[in-house]
Length: 113
Length: 111
Image (tube, rainbow over all chains, first blue to last red; front, side, top):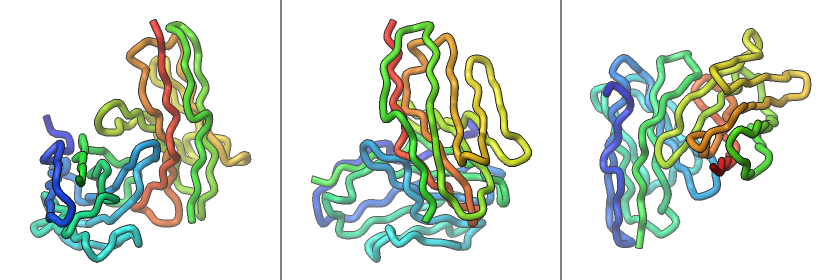
C-alpha cells in the first residue's frame, strides 16, 4: 500500500501527558499537511510542510503543539500537556507542490481523559 | 476567511434512490473545489472541479461547479448501502496549500 499512513491509529492519554503522532506521506509527495477533525465538523487546517520546511501554521496550533519533518519524508506532531479539548481525529495528508488534490491518511484518534 | 457550507447536514434514503448534495462557498481567489467521501477513516478523494473543469463524472457519481452561484452539487444515482458515508466539500483559495472544508453531509442508504 503506497498511500498515506499514520501511527498510532488510536491513542488514549491522561490530561497533562505528552503525545506524539507520526505520518508517512505518499513517497513522491513533497508537501505534507496536518488537519484536526472534531465530531460533526470537517477537517481544519493546522500546518503544512514543503520538503522539510514548515511554511504555515494555523492560529489553531497553540504553543503546546509542534510539528517536524526533519528529512522531508515522514512527519511528527507532538502535543504537550494535553487537554481534554485536544480530543479529536488528527489527519495527515500529502500532495505534490502546486497541486490542490490532497490525499489523506487514516488519521489518529486522540482521546484525552 | 474562507467559508464552506454544506447542505443538508444529513439524509436517509433507500437503495436505488438518487441523492443531491449541496456545497456553497465564499473564498478569496477561488482555485478549486474538491469532494471527498469519508467513512470511518480517511477522507477519500472523489473529484476536483476548477474553472477549466466544471463537470466531472465517475460511475454513479457526478458533480457540477457553478462559479456564478459559488456552489457545487454532488449527485449519486442508484444509491447502494456502500454509499453510506460523510461527504465533504473543500475549497482551495488564495493559498495554494490550504483546503477549507465544510462540515459534511452524512448520507445513510438503507437496504
